[in-house]
Length: 104
Image 1 (spheres, rainbow, N blue to C red):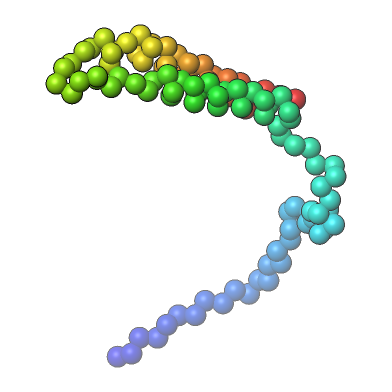
Image 2: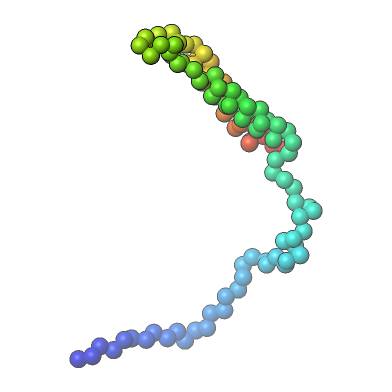
């Protein structure tokens, strides 16, 4: 008892038609009319935001104890490390968001 495979043949011919006009190679290469997404002001704001984030990370460093046998919570939990540094980092992130969404 051998099983035969069914072959389904379509009687209709369907021609595929493109729905979007195709670009020529010359149109793809032509970049003289292409406008950039960001301008100089966006990049300057991005650099300022990156500098603020890096500055906040540098402010967060520290907290090393002068003697390994002593514990001084004023060094580890200082206002610079717990308040100032995170606020500077958040300000940098806000500047980055503004730089990305600012229109020309």
